[in-house]
Image 1 (tube, rainbow, N blue to C red):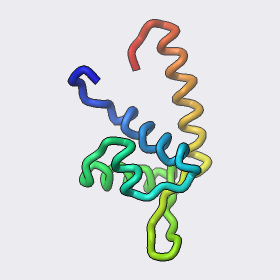
Image 2 (image 1 turned 180 degrees about the vertical axis):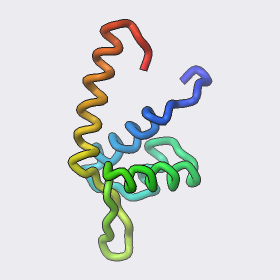
Image 3 (image 1 turned 90 degrees about the vertical axis):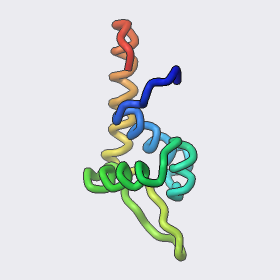
Image 4 (image 1 turned 45 degrees about the vertical axis):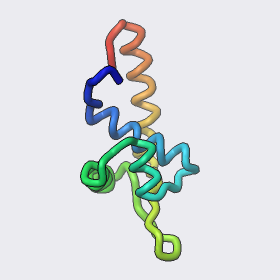
Length: 93
């Protein structure tokens, strides 16, 4: 990543895609590793995504999992469209 920090949007997208690619059922530790986040940042972003309705949490036995809501799925689709548009105009995302 050439030394640059990821934007908030890129972190959000990494989290949502991680959940999506995990069959819409991801444990926090899986998200932490795949999205390359510290525990503190993971908690911050998961709380924000839960509050804004992009993801929901559920338990299976004594384990907590996260899944995308319709809003989260729609965000990924919209972001991909925006990304294509930006690239088409030669702009970085």
